[in-house]
Length: 80
Image (tube, rainbow, N blue to C red):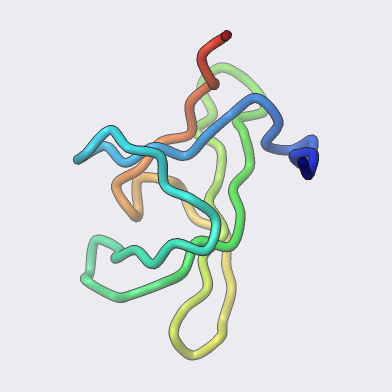
């Protein structure tokens, strides 16, 4: 099993609409309806932070956004 990078270890990206986990490589739409691919995400660094999600546009351009841009949030994984 591949170990998670430290910037997202213990966290997951979750859709606010469905409650399901959004996976790296998944195709999503932003609030404008533009299609993008989830490249990575980063956990919040402190309490009021939301973290970031890294998206790749159809033209190949990559940028970090607030998770709300694609109607998601970064949450801690439940303890097993």
